[in-house]
Length: 359
Ligand SMILES: Nc1nc2c(ncn2[C@@H]2O[C@H](COP(=O)(O)OP(=O)(O)OP(=O)(O)O)[C@@H](O)[C@H]2O)c(=O)[nH]1
Ligand SMILES: [Mg+2]
Image 1: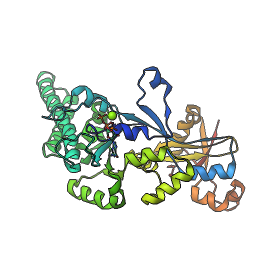
Image 2: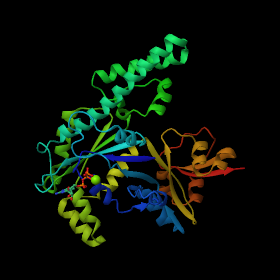
Image 3: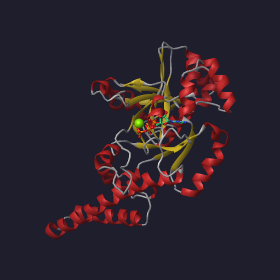
Image 4: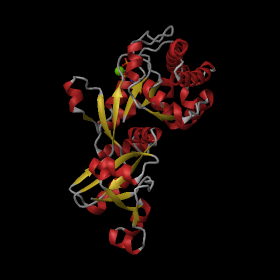
Protein backbone atom coordinates (compact mmCIF):
# COMPACT_ATOMS: atom_id res chain seq x y z
CA UNK A 1 0.00 0.00 0.00
CA UNK A 2 1.69 3.18 -1.09
CA UNK A 3 0.60 6.77 -0.67
CA UNK A 4 2.18 9.63 -2.59
CA UNK A 5 2.51 13.14 -1.25
CA UNK A 6 1.76 15.60 -4.05
CA UNK A 7 1.31 19.35 -4.12
CA UNK A 8 2.46 22.60 -5.67
CA UNK A 9 5.98 23.88 -5.00
CA UNK A 10 6.65 25.30 -1.51
CA UNK A 11 3.47 23.88 -0.05
CA UNK A 12 5.36 22.00 2.67
CA UNK A 13 5.50 18.44 1.27
CA UNK A 14 9.06 17.71 2.24
CA UNK A 15 8.64 19.37 5.63
CA UNK A 16 5.61 17.17 6.25
CA UNK A 17 7.44 14.09 5.03
CA UNK A 18 10.35 14.77 7.35
CA UNK A 19 8.01 14.95 10.33
CA UNK A 20 7.17 11.29 9.88
CA UNK A 21 9.20 10.63 12.97
CA UNK A 22 8.33 6.97 13.28
CA UNK A 23 10.00 6.60 9.94
CA UNK A 24 12.09 3.60 9.16
CA UNK A 25 13.71 4.16 5.83
CA UNK A 26 13.16 1.26 3.52
CA UNK A 27 16.55 -0.40 2.88
CA UNK A 28 15.77 -1.12 -0.78
CA UNK A 29 14.89 2.54 -1.24
CA UNK A 30 18.20 3.48 0.31
CA UNK A 31 19.99 1.17 -2.08
CA UNK A 32 18.39 2.99 -4.95
CA UNK A 33 19.45 6.21 -3.19
CA UNK A 34 15.82 7.11 -3.22
CA UNK A 35 15.39 8.02 0.42
CA UNK A 36 12.03 9.68 -0.09
CA UNK A 37 10.12 6.52 0.75
CA UNK A 38 9.09 6.13 4.37
CA UNK A 39 7.45 3.18 6.06
CA UNK A 40 5.13 4.67 8.63
CA UNK A 41 3.50 2.90 11.55
CA UNK A 42 -0.26 3.12 11.82
CA UNK A 43 -0.77 4.15 15.43
CA UNK A 44 -3.58 2.07 16.93
CA UNK A 45 -4.58 2.34 20.58
CA UNK A 46 -6.12 -1.15 20.47
CA UNK A 47 -2.73 -2.66 19.71
CA UNK A 48 -1.26 -0.68 22.60
CA UNK A 49 -3.93 -2.12 24.90
CA UNK A 50 -3.27 -5.70 23.78
CA UNK A 51 0.42 -5.10 24.37
CA UNK A 52 -0.34 -3.93 27.91
CA UNK A 53 -2.34 -7.09 28.57
CA UNK A 54 -0.08 -9.73 26.97
CA UNK A 55 3.32 -8.10 27.57
CA UNK A 56 4.62 -9.77 24.39
CA UNK A 57 8.28 -9.97 23.34
CA UNK A 58 7.36 -8.08 20.20
CA UNK A 59 4.79 -5.53 19.11
CA UNK A 60 4.25 -4.99 15.40
CA UNK A 61 2.14 -2.11 14.06
CA UNK A 62 0.47 -2.10 10.69
CA UNK A 63 2.46 0.04 8.28
CA UNK A 64 1.85 2.20 5.28
CA UNK A 65 4.38 3.46 2.73
CA UNK A 66 4.56 7.17 2.07
CA UNK A 67 6.51 8.73 -0.78
CA UNK A 68 7.50 12.36 -1.15
CA UNK A 69 6.79 12.87 -4.84
CA UNK A 70 9.65 15.08 -5.92
CA UNK A 71 9.73 16.28 -9.47
CA UNK A 72 7.08 18.93 -9.73
CA UNK A 73 9.23 21.97 -10.51
CA UNK A 74 8.20 25.54 -10.00
CA UNK A 75 6.61 26.91 -13.17
CA UNK A 76 5.42 23.56 -14.40
CA UNK A 77 1.85 24.29 -13.46
CA UNK A 78 1.64 27.46 -15.54
CA UNK A 79 -0.17 26.61 -18.74
CA UNK A 80 -1.49 23.12 -18.35
CA UNK A 81 1.41 20.78 -18.49
CA UNK A 82 2.84 19.24 -15.40
CA UNK A 83 5.31 16.97 -17.08
CA UNK A 84 4.19 13.55 -18.14
CA UNK A 85 7.05 11.87 -16.32
CA UNK A 86 5.87 13.26 -13.01
CA UNK A 87 2.29 12.18 -13.67
CA UNK A 88 3.54 8.73 -14.61
CA UNK A 89 5.24 8.43 -11.23
CA UNK A 90 2.11 9.56 -9.43
CA UNK A 91 0.16 6.74 -11.08
CA UNK A 92 2.05 4.10 -9.14
CA UNK A 93 0.51 5.23 -5.84
CA UNK A 94 -2.62 3.65 -4.35
CA UNK A 95 -3.77 6.98 -2.93
CA UNK A 96 -2.62 10.58 -2.78
CA UNK A 97 -2.11 13.13 -0.06
CA UNK A 98 -2.32 16.60 -1.59
CA UNK A 99 -0.47 19.06 0.65
CA UNK A 100 -1.93 22.53 0.11
CA UNK A 101 -0.19 25.76 1.11
CA UNK A 102 -2.25 27.47 3.77
CA UNK A 103 0.45 29.35 5.67
CA UNK A 104 1.62 32.91 5.05
CA UNK A 105 5.35 33.46 5.06
CA UNK A 106 6.96 36.18 2.99
CA UNK A 107 10.24 34.29 3.09
CA UNK A 108 8.69 31.38 1.19
CA UNK A 109 7.78 32.21 -2.44
CA UNK A 110 4.16 31.95 -3.51
CA UNK A 111 2.63 32.76 -6.91
CA UNK A 112 -0.46 34.97 -6.82
CA UNK A 113 -1.00 35.05 -3.06
CA UNK A 114 -2.50 32.54 -0.71
CA UNK A 115 -5.51 30.69 -2.16
CA UNK A 116 -6.08 27.11 -1.07
CA UNK A 117 -9.10 26.44 -3.25
CA UNK A 118 -7.25 27.68 -6.35
CA UNK A 119 -4.29 25.42 -5.54
CA UNK A 120 -6.52 22.40 -4.95
CA UNK A 121 -8.21 22.97 -8.31
CA UNK A 122 -4.91 23.55 -10.12
CA UNK A 123 -3.58 20.13 -9.31
CA UNK A 124 -6.92 18.39 -9.67
CA UNK A 125 -7.34 19.94 -13.14
CA UNK A 126 -3.96 18.54 -14.12
CA UNK A 127 -5.10 15.08 -13.11
CA UNK A 128 -8.38 15.57 -14.97
CA UNK A 129 -6.66 16.78 -18.15
CA UNK A 130 -4.22 13.94 -18.05
CA UNK A 131 -7.04 11.40 -17.76
CA UNK A 132 -9.04 13.08 -20.53
CA UNK A 133 -6.07 13.00 -22.88
CA UNK A 134 -5.53 9.35 -22.10
CA UNK A 135 -9.19 8.37 -22.52
CA UNK A 136 -9.50 10.28 -25.79
CA UNK A 137 -6.45 8.60 -27.27
CA UNK A 138 -7.76 5.22 -26.10
CA UNK A 139 -11.12 5.87 -27.78
CA UNK A 140 -9.40 6.79 -31.03
CA UNK A 141 -7.29 3.66 -30.98
CA UNK A 142 -10.20 1.39 -30.08
CA UNK A 143 -12.37 2.81 -32.86
CA UNK A 144 -9.64 2.02 -35.37
CA UNK A 145 -9.20 -1.48 -33.98
CA UNK A 146 -12.91 -2.16 -34.17
CA UNK A 147 -13.07 -1.11 -37.80
CA UNK A 148 -10.31 -3.58 -38.56
CA UNK A 149 -11.16 -6.57 -36.40
CA UNK A 150 -14.63 -6.16 -34.88
CA UNK A 151 -13.35 -7.66 -31.61
CA UNK A 152 -15.87 -7.83 -28.75
CA UNK A 153 -13.21 -6.96 -26.20
CA UNK A 154 -12.46 -3.70 -27.95
CA UNK A 155 -16.15 -2.88 -28.19
CA UNK A 156 -16.62 -3.43 -24.47
CA UNK A 157 -13.65 -1.27 -23.62
CA UNK A 158 -14.80 1.44 -26.01
CA UNK A 159 -18.14 1.62 -24.22
CA UNK A 160 -16.34 1.96 -20.88
CA UNK A 161 -13.99 4.66 -22.17
CA UNK A 162 -16.93 6.59 -23.60
CA UNK A 163 -18.62 6.52 -20.21
CA UNK A 164 -15.44 7.72 -18.52
CA UNK A 165 -15.02 10.42 -21.13
CA UNK A 166 -18.51 11.75 -20.59
CA UNK A 167 -17.90 11.94 -16.85
CA UNK A 168 -14.55 13.70 -17.30
CA UNK A 169 -15.85 16.12 -19.93
CA UNK A 170 -18.44 17.30 -17.44
CA UNK A 171 -15.54 18.31 -15.22
CA UNK A 172 -15.85 15.43 -12.76
CA UNK A 173 -12.94 13.43 -11.40
CA UNK A 174 -13.29 9.68 -11.93
CA UNK A 175 -13.32 9.03 -8.18
CA UNK A 176 -16.89 10.33 -8.13
CA UNK A 177 -18.03 7.83 -10.75
CA UNK A 178 -19.99 4.64 -10.02
CA UNK A 179 -18.02 2.02 -11.89
CA UNK A 180 -19.65 -1.23 -12.99
CA UNK A 181 -17.60 -4.31 -12.01
CA UNK A 182 -16.44 -4.84 -15.60
CA UNK A 183 -14.47 -1.57 -15.37
CA UNK A 184 -12.23 -2.96 -12.65
CA UNK A 185 -9.60 -4.27 -15.00
CA UNK A 186 -9.39 -0.97 -16.91
CA UNK A 187 -8.98 0.90 -13.64
CA UNK A 188 -6.28 -1.50 -12.61
CA UNK A 189 -4.45 -1.35 -15.92
CA UNK A 190 -4.69 2.39 -16.57
CA UNK A 191 -4.54 3.80 -13.02
CA UNK A 192 -6.32 7.06 -13.90
CA UNK A 193 -5.11 9.87 -11.66
CA UNK A 194 -8.48 11.43 -10.94
CA UNK A 195 -9.73 8.08 -9.64
CA UNK A 196 -7.08 7.88 -6.92
CA UNK A 197 -8.42 8.17 -3.38
CA UNK A 198 -7.53 11.68 -2.28
CA UNK A 199 -6.72 13.19 1.08
CA UNK A 200 -6.34 16.96 1.00
CA UNK A 201 -4.01 18.09 3.78
CA UNK A 202 -4.26 21.83 4.45
CA UNK A 203 -0.93 23.08 5.75
CA UNK A 204 -2.27 25.97 7.84
CA UNK A 205 -0.37 28.75 9.54
CA UNK A 206 0.13 28.29 13.27
CA UNK A 207 -2.25 31.16 14.01
CA UNK A 208 -5.02 29.45 12.08
CA UNK A 209 -4.77 26.05 13.78
CA UNK A 210 -7.21 27.11 16.50
CA UNK A 211 -9.94 27.68 13.88
CA UNK A 212 -8.91 24.79 11.66
CA UNK A 213 -12.34 23.16 11.58
CA UNK A 214 -13.95 26.34 10.35
CA UNK A 215 -11.39 26.67 7.56
CA UNK A 216 -11.87 23.04 6.54
CA UNK A 217 -15.63 23.58 6.30
CA UNK A 218 -15.16 26.64 4.10
CA UNK A 219 -12.91 24.73 1.75
CA UNK A 220 -15.18 21.71 1.73
CA UNK A 221 -18.19 23.84 0.80
CA UNK A 222 -16.33 25.55 -2.01
CA UNK A 223 -14.92 22.48 -3.72
CA UNK A 224 -17.93 20.24 -2.94
CA UNK A 225 -16.31 17.01 -4.11
CA UNK A 226 -17.42 13.60 -3.02
CA UNK A 227 -15.09 10.92 -1.75
CA UNK A 228 -12.37 13.29 -0.59
CA UNK A 229 -11.09 13.64 2.96
CA UNK A 230 -9.88 17.08 4.06
CA UNK A 231 -7.60 17.35 7.10
CA UNK A 232 -5.91 20.42 8.58
CA UNK A 233 -2.42 20.35 10.03
CA UNK A 234 0.65 22.53 10.46
CA UNK A 235 3.91 21.20 9.07
CA UNK A 236 5.76 23.71 11.21
CA UNK A 237 4.08 22.63 14.46
CA UNK A 238 4.65 18.98 13.56
CA UNK A 239 8.29 19.71 12.95
CA UNK A 240 8.65 21.45 16.30
CA UNK A 241 6.80 18.61 18.03
CA UNK A 242 9.21 16.11 16.55
CA UNK A 243 12.12 17.79 18.30
CA UNK A 244 10.58 17.68 21.79
CA UNK A 245 10.65 15.02 24.49
CA UNK A 246 7.38 13.58 25.78
CA UNK A 247 6.86 16.07 28.60
CA UNK A 248 7.60 19.16 26.53
CA UNK A 249 5.40 17.73 23.83
CA UNK A 250 2.39 17.57 26.16
CA UNK A 251 2.82 21.21 27.20
CA UNK A 252 3.26 22.35 23.61
CA UNK A 253 0.19 20.48 22.39
CA UNK A 254 -1.91 21.88 25.20
CA UNK A 255 -0.85 25.34 24.10
CA UNK A 256 -2.22 24.78 20.60
CA UNK A 257 -5.22 22.80 21.81
CA UNK A 258 -4.04 19.66 20.00
CA UNK A 259 -5.10 16.21 21.16
CA UNK A 260 -2.67 14.18 19.10
CA UNK A 261 -0.04 14.80 16.47
CA UNK A 262 -1.54 15.50 13.06
CA UNK A 263 0.62 12.76 11.71
CA UNK A 264 -1.20 9.99 13.59
CA UNK A 265 -4.52 11.44 12.47
CA UNK A 266 -3.45 11.82 8.84
CA UNK A 267 -2.09 8.31 8.64
CA UNK A 268 -5.33 6.95 10.10
CA UNK A 269 -7.38 8.96 7.60
CA UNK A 270 -5.23 7.67 4.79
CA UNK A 271 -5.85 4.16 6.03
CA UNK A 272 -9.60 4.72 6.01
CA UNK A 273 -9.38 6.38 2.61
CA UNK A 274 -7.84 3.25 1.17
CA UNK A 275 -10.70 1.13 2.51
CA UNK A 276 -8.34 -0.64 4.88
CA UNK A 277 -8.86 -2.06 8.33
CA UNK A 278 -6.92 -4.07 10.89
CA UNK A 279 -7.26 -7.39 12.53
CA UNK A 280 -4.98 -8.61 15.30
CA UNK A 281 -3.04 -11.64 16.35
CA UNK A 282 -2.13 -11.56 20.02
CA UNK A 283 -0.12 -13.64 22.45
CA UNK A 284 2.93 -13.66 24.68
CA UNK A 285 5.33 -13.85 21.75
CA UNK A 286 3.87 -11.14 19.61
CA UNK A 287 0.98 -8.71 19.36
CA UNK A 288 0.48 -7.59 15.83
CA UNK A 289 -1.88 -5.52 13.69
CA UNK A 290 -2.43 -6.79 10.15
CA UNK A 291 -3.85 -4.80 7.27
CA UNK A 292 -6.74 -6.05 5.16
CA UNK A 293 -9.25 -4.51 2.81
CA UNK A 294 -12.83 -4.07 3.98
CA UNK A 295 -14.87 -7.14 3.13
CA UNK A 296 -12.06 -9.70 3.22
CA UNK A 297 -12.89 -13.19 4.53
CA UNK A 298 -11.23 -15.14 7.34
CA UNK A 299 -9.40 -17.22 4.75
CA UNK A 300 -8.14 -14.09 2.93
CA UNK A 301 -7.00 -12.67 6.25
CA UNK A 302 -5.18 -15.91 7.09
CA UNK A 303 -3.42 -15.57 3.73
CA UNK A 304 -2.14 -12.13 4.73
CA UNK A 305 -0.32 -13.77 7.65
CA UNK A 306 1.04 -16.63 5.58
CA UNK A 307 0.22 -18.18 2.19
CA UNK A 308 0.22 -21.60 3.85
CA UNK A 309 -2.48 -20.44 6.25
CA UNK A 310 -4.63 -19.61 3.26
CA UNK A 311 -4.07 -22.92 1.52
CA UNK A 312 -4.45 -25.07 4.62
CA UNK A 313 -7.12 -22.98 6.32
CA UNK A 314 -9.49 -24.99 8.52
CA UNK A 315 -11.22 -22.51 10.81
CA UNK A 316 -10.57 -19.29 12.64
CA UNK A 317 -11.24 -18.55 16.28
CA UNK A 318 -12.50 -14.99 16.44
CA UNK A 319 -13.26 -12.50 19.17
CA UNK A 320 -14.00 -8.82 18.62
CA UNK A 321 -11.90 -6.13 20.26
CA UNK A 322 -14.87 -4.98 22.36
CA UNK A 323 -15.72 -8.47 23.60
CA UNK A 324 -12.12 -9.18 24.45
CA UNK A 325 -11.76 -5.98 26.45
CA UNK A 326 -14.88 -6.89 28.44
CA UNK A 327 -13.43 -10.28 29.41
CA UNK A 328 -9.66 -9.70 29.27
CA UNK A 329 -8.61 -13.36 28.80
CA UNK A 330 -9.38 -15.98 26.15
CA UNK A 331 -10.62 -18.39 28.84
CA UNK A 332 -13.20 -15.85 30.01
CA UNK A 333 -14.14 -15.04 26.41
CA UNK A 334 -14.87 -18.76 25.88
CA UNK A 335 -16.97 -18.94 29.04
CA UNK A 336 -18.93 -15.90 27.91
CA UNK A 337 -19.44 -17.53 24.52
CA UNK A 338 -17.87 -14.66 22.57
CA UNK A 339 -14.84 -16.60 21.32
CA UNK A 340 -16.41 -17.93 18.15
CA UNK A 341 -15.37 -20.58 15.67
CA UNK A 342 -15.80 -19.22 12.14
CA UNK A 343 -15.43 -20.77 8.69
CA UNK A 344 -13.55 -19.49 5.69
CA UNK A 345 -16.40 -17.33 4.41
CA UNK A 346 -16.59 -15.28 7.61
CA UNK A 347 -16.16 -11.57 6.84
CA UNK A 348 -13.51 -10.20 9.16
CA UNK A 349 -14.44 -7.03 11.08
CA UNK A 350 -12.16 -4.18 12.01
CA UNK A 351 -10.61 -4.98 15.38
CA UNK A 352 -11.19 -8.75 15.33
CA UNK A 353 -8.62 -10.92 17.07
CA UNK A 354 -7.99 -13.97 14.92
CA UNK A 355 -6.47 -17.28 15.78
CA UNK A 356 -6.14 -19.33 12.61
CA UNK A 357 -6.41 -23.11 12.73
CA UNK A 358 -4.69 -24.65 9.79
CA UNK A 359 -3.57 -28.07 8.58
N1 LIG B 1 6.03 29.29 8.12
C1 LIG B 1 5.92 28.06 7.67
N2 LIG B 1 6.83 27.63 6.77
C2 LIG B 1 6.70 26.39 6.28
C3 LIG B 1 5.67 25.52 6.69
N3 LIG B 1 5.80 24.35 6.03
C4 LIG B 1 6.87 24.50 5.24
N4 LIG B 1 7.44 25.73 5.38
C5 LIG B 1 8.61 26.27 4.70
O1 LIG B 1 8.31 26.38 3.34
C6 LIG B 1 9.45 26.07 2.53
C7 LIG B 1 9.08 24.99 1.53
O2 LIG B 1 8.75 23.80 2.26
P1 LIG B 1 9.00 22.37 1.64
O3 LIG B 1 8.55 21.40 2.64
O4 LIG B 1 10.36 22.25 1.11
O5 LIG B 1 7.97 22.44 0.44
P2 LIG B 1 7.79 21.41 -0.75
O6 LIG B 1 6.33 21.34 -0.98
O7 LIG B 1 8.50 20.14 -0.45
O8 LIG B 1 8.46 22.19 -1.92
P3 LIG B 1 9.05 21.60 -3.30
O9 LIG B 1 9.68 20.27 -3.00
O10 LIG B 1 10.01 22.64 -3.73
O11 LIG B 1 7.87 21.49 -4.21
C8 LIG B 1 10.54 25.64 3.49
O12 LIG B 1 11.38 26.75 3.69
C9 LIG B 1 9.77 25.31 4.77
O13 LIG B 1 10.57 25.54 5.92
C10 LIG B 1 4.72 25.99 7.67
O14 LIG B 1 3.80 25.30 8.10
N5 LIG B 1 4.91 27.26 8.10
MG1 LIG C 1 9.95 19.05 -1.52
